[in-house]
Image 1 (cartoon, rainbow, N blue to C red):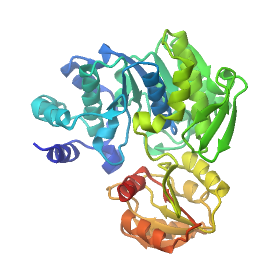
Image 2 (cartoon, rainbow, N blue to C red; image 1 turned 90 degrees about the vertical axis):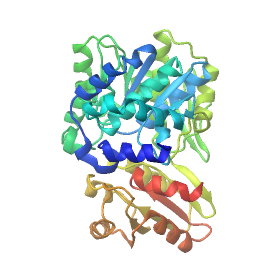
Image 3 (cartoon, rainbow, N blue to C red; image 1 turned 180 degrees about the vertical axis):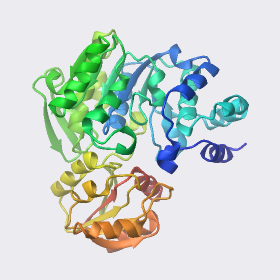
Length: 428
C-alpha cells in the first residue's frame, strides 16, 4: 500500500468523527482497552500528561510540549484534528510520524485490529502510543478527543490532568448544560493525580471538579487563583505576560484567548515541577516564544498573508468564536471580509449572534460530510443581519474575498477547523 492508499483505507474502514460526526462516536472504553491489550499497553512505557476541555486544549498541549522539549525531554504529542496531513496528529519533538510507519502499522496489524472494529480515532490513538514507545519518548502530551470520561484516551494514567475550560459544545453527546459537560470532562481526573483547571467558570461548574477531585483524592489547582500577579498585555506580534516567576514572558500565539491558556500552562509547569519534572525557566521562555516552530502548531489566529491581511482561526463554537469576534473588533482595517463555514452539528444561532454584522461574508462549505450547506448557512445568517454570497468550496470563497479586498482590508477565514483545513493549502 502507498501512504495515500493507507489513508483511504483508514478513512473508509474506520468511522471518523472529523468526517462524519456523531455516527463515528463510540461511547465507552471497550475498544480502546482491547486495542491497548493487543499492542501490549505501549503508553505504560513513558510518562503522560492528559489535556481536556472545550477550547484551548490544542494550544495548551502544544505549549506544554514545546516547553518540555526545551527542558531536554523527548516529547510525544498526540492531538486532533489534523488540518493538512494526517501525520500532524502524531509528533515527536515536533516531527510528524513517518509515513512508512503508518503504512506498516496498517499492513502488519489490520487482521488483528479489524475484529475489534475500532473507530478512526481509537486506532489512530493506539498508533500514536506505539510510535511514541518505539521512539522512546520520555513523556507524551495527550489531547482528549471528545469529552473525557468515555474518550478513547482515558485509558492512560497521567502524571497530570488538565481541563482548560468548559463551554457548550457537542451537546448532543455530552449534555445540554455546562454542568453536564463538566461532569464528562471531569472524567479524566484520576486517583491521587493532580489536576489543573484553567478557567473556573461558574460556581456550579467549579463544584463539579471539586467534588470529583475530592472523591478520588486528586489534588486540584485552579489556574486563575494559582498564578500570582498575572498580567497579560496584547501586542502586535503576540502577548507579553508578567508573572512573579516569569517577568516579560513573550508569547508567540496571538489569539485573545491565549492569555488564559498561558496561565493554565504556567500553573501546569509549577505542578509538574512539584511532581519531580525538571523544567528550567529558560525552557518556559523559549517554549512560549517559539511554539509554532517547535511543534508545528497551525490555525490559531494564524496570519497567512499581509496585503491584504489574511487571518485564520479554527475556533468552531460560540465559546471560542466569541474571542475571535472580539479580536476582529480590535484589528485595524478599511473593510472586513469573512470566509465562513460551519459543521452541521453546531449550535448555529449562538455563533451567528456574536459574529460582526459590519462585514461582507463569503458563506461556504468545507470538503467533509459534516459541513453545513452553504445556502442553509446564508439563510440562517441573514436572520442575524449577516449578509454575503455563497460559494461551493472554500477555495472559491477565499479567491473571491481576495479579489474583492483592498490592500488595507482584512480577510478572516474560520467558523470551523474544516474550513481552515481547506484554506491552508492555498497559502503554502
